[in-house]
Length: 383
Image 1 (cartoon, rainbow, N blue to C red):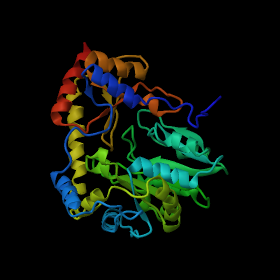
Image 2: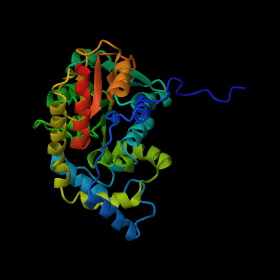
Image 3: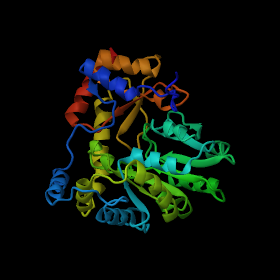
Image 4: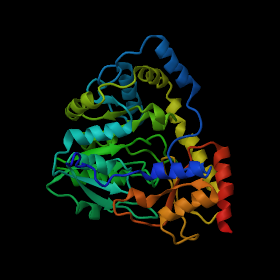
């Protein structure tokens, strides 16, 4: 008797689990997974405690606590000059990944095509496939990871239901410019194609570059669901809280799914974040904070044979290691862990085709002492 017929037959143990286990086994510095090793704001933690003590411990409204949605709307107006209705255009979610899955589930039907830009966050493709959608892949290439929009346009067909974009881009640190968003806007004009925009690193963008949110572009905004993450923003990835911004009609469909796969999100954290957002400097200072960490990592690795590629955003830096080895990137990343004591992620695992440009990804959301130790260990690869 066949009890199971997997809807995701090709999904196994993720590379993050593999590399973290390898790092633990060899007591290596783990720069593979994307989480900080420094604490969240004491003020924010105190605000969560206060919310609990005030008795805000029961279900929040399904779309999210109203004070939080109102302050998110103020933040969007301040950053992007866009007026968003907090009542019917913002939904609080259990992290960015849940928001992405919910958006795909709400709109993608069996046989619909969804264009994914790879390398890509590893939840995208399974989320499309489990809903019966057909992933259509556009591949970026090192060293610049730029989209050629003429080539991209050839992927659009009458079956295209959704295009999923991610800026700043995990894993490469590339960003979409205004020119990119205008090109995308032109491609989808006069179509029924939806845009799902993963913008969880919106505040982690460097070198005086602005974040080009889909919310800035009126004809994109009317067809877009934009996803954000407080966990990424405020160094508390384990809290799993984010939000989705979309026009009223799209939000109504999004919430139909959201109410049955999550219903509502941790109440005390929502009320704490609402109070925390009253001080915009809490998120406006993040660009400088993380740019210093990026530059610190670049400095401690400058005497290695790892070649850094340009990082405009996220808390990931990618390196070309081809001057050191011609090994496949998965093998090289494992050897980095076991022989040199630093765990990285091979970028090929973010491609469906396992395209190997001899590039690895390191996370710099770490204390300076952690990055310094990693830099010292990586210099041994020159010998």
